[in-house]
Structures are given as C-alpha cells and as structure tokens.
Image 1: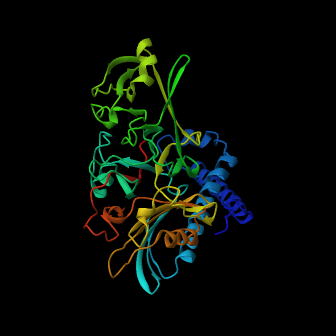
Image 2: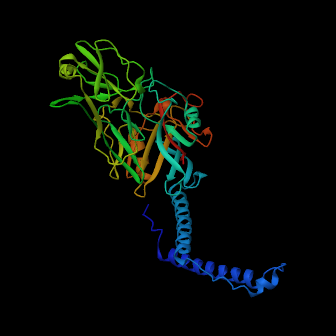
Image 3: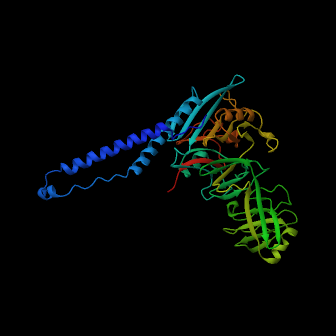
Amino acid sequence: MDTLNFYNGNTTKTAKLLVNFSIAAAAIFTLTIFHNPPIMADDLILAHAPVPPITVDKEQIYQQVLTQTSTESRKNSFNQQIREKYPGAIIRDVDTGVKHIKITRYYDGKPVRINVIEIDRILAENYELKPALSSTNNNLHSKRTITTIAKNTNSLVAINGTFFKPQTGVPLGTLMIDGKIYTGPIYDRVAMGIFDDGFKVSRVQLNGTLKNGKHELKIDNINQPRMLASYVLAYTREWGNVSPSTPQYGYQIAIKNNKIIASSSNPLVIPEGGYVVVAPLRSLKPFIDSGKAKVEISTNPDWKNVRHIISGGPYLVKDSSVYVDMTAEKLNSIGGKNPRTAIGYTKNNTLIMVAVDGRENKSVGMTLMQLAYFMKSVGCTNAINLDGGGSTVMYVNGQVVNNPAFKGGIAISNALVLSKKIN
C-alpha cells in the first residue's frame, strides 16, 4: 500500500475551520454568561463589574483540533487499507489501531486457515509490543500456555515466539526484553528489533567479551545450551541459581562487580546481578590469577536504542523481496507444509502477526515459501518465521482464535505480546 499523508491540505483546512468555529462558540458562550448572568443577591454589584476579556490561545486550539482530525484521518485510512487488502475476510476491531482478520486461502486446491493481526502502533498508542517469558520471575527454564502468558502480562494480543528447547523451555536464539539480553543467537539466525518508532530485521551475532586489562576472551554465547566443549559460555541468574556442569578440561568463575568471587571445576552459584563464565581452564587462568574480570555483552548489528529483540528463522521477506534462507540458518528440518507463525512489518511500520493452521483436512498448512509469498502479499517489507508446528497459537482479547492441534495450544517458552502500557 502507498504511504498516506495524514497532514494534507484538506486536513489542515478542516482543522482551521474547526478552530474558528470553536473560537466563535467560546466567544458567544462567554458573552452569554457575563452579559446575561442569573439574578443573584449581589446583582447590583455584578451589574457594574467589568466584563472579563475573552482570551483564546488560537495556536493551542489549532494543534488540538489538528491532532484530532489527523488521528481520525489515520483511522479511516487504516480501515480502508485493511478492507482493500483482505477482500471477503472476517475483520474485527480488537481496539483502536488493532485489527483481527480471519481468512481462508487455497494452495494446490487445499484450504489453509490464516489468522492475521495488524497493529498501527501510532493509533494503538496505549499499548506496548514486546516479548514475554512464560515465567513471571524471568526464569528461562519454564513453559506455560499462551493464555497464561497473556493474562500474566495483561495482554490484548499474543502469539508464540522463539524456538525453544522442549525439555526445559529455554529459548533458542536471541531474546532481549527491555534492553536486557536473556539469550544469545544460534547459527546467527534472523531476529526482529523492536524500537519505539519502528522495526529492524537482520541476522544477529553475539558480541561477548571477558576483559581484564590486556587480556580478552571471546564469549561465544549467553544462557544457551553448550554446542562445543571449547565454547566460552556466560550464565546469568535467569538461567537458574546454579550453572550447568563443566565440560572436560573446563573451569568456572563467578563474577560480580567485575571481581571473581568464586572459581571451581564444579557448578557454581550464579550471583545476583553477575555471571558465571564456563570455559577451558587455560583460557580462564589469567583472569583467575588477577581476581578480576569484566563481562561485556552486545549484539551485531549494534542496534542503537533497540528496546526488544525476538528471533526466529528463516527470513521470509527481505527488503520487499521473498527471501527464504533456511539452509544458511540450518533450518532444513522445518520444511514441508506445517502450522506456521510469522511476523513482519510494512513500509508504514504497521506490524503484522500471522498464525497458520495446519496438519488437518480443513487447513493443510503452508510451506515456508508459501508463507513468504503471503507475507509479501499483505505488504511486508521485512518478515521472519517464528517457531511453528505444535507451537503455533494466537490469542486475541481473552481467547485462542486459531485451531492448534492441542486445544488452547501447548505450553511454550515465550511469546510476543501487545499489552497495556504501564504509566
């Protein structure tokens, strides 16, 4: 869809007419009050009192009216865009700036049920979009249903989020909430950054370093399962109270306030506000000898002012072109027709959430390529796949609106939620 200019000439003229009308009405009301006052005991005194001058801040009224008319214009344009984009669909208003669309598409003659949420974040100004862990105390080893997650976060809308380890619930891939990195990337998979004024999508790498003067050690990941014995991994309290077992030839150090407070070949208590770093002993020895170590964690790209990051994979749409890189992101195992979850955004920064039902006669699911073309068809300039299959579930205004294989959806690790802002 084309970008709409909400501050066009018609809007401005309308605002000015409304301002002039408001000023005139205010003047008449004021004169009526002061020149025709009700009869009171002090009527004679009031009769000789000077009439207060009429003072009107025309610019302030103009700005207020302009805001109201531009908001109304944006609402009308958003409504029109949705109607034109989804002909024949069931469209519901969830709240201002939030639409729920239910459609059925046919691929190779087979039906596919699709639930879509579109969010205009300017109109939905009272809501915040962010990832949410299933645990209320931010423990990564946790799984709950999406209904529980949504209720715990007072959310209007929620969909399932990143891949996760089924046995434990630990998210697999980059997850940042409120500027804090909870888990790092796996295979540099694609992620979406959520900013106050928009979105960005990129494959993400971890920039992690253990420092001590002239000594530096690369940290391979944070709060993720170990893939190689030689990897250097950092764990925070969100992982749990105690670090995992040490690999062969490995050692552990507990760090708080840039000081090593404990070291051992056995698991250590993870300090509040600190880290446990597990690595080959020879790599940690210079830090153990000095008793000092500083952990620095960031991402590449280094998105300035990013509030939240949620990962998935593979890409679906990149710079307005269909782009499915499942081999590069080591995701060949999720091919075929399946239930799918995806997120993307348009050039107007409207966020689009999608849940596709599958593995049933009434909805056979989508391949990743079919999903990519769908996301492009609804206007996404960038879009990514999230965890799917049995995890695919969408919650809207108190209920699950799609048809997951397990009624209400399986217990999941995390979700992307639209919840009321906390003042």
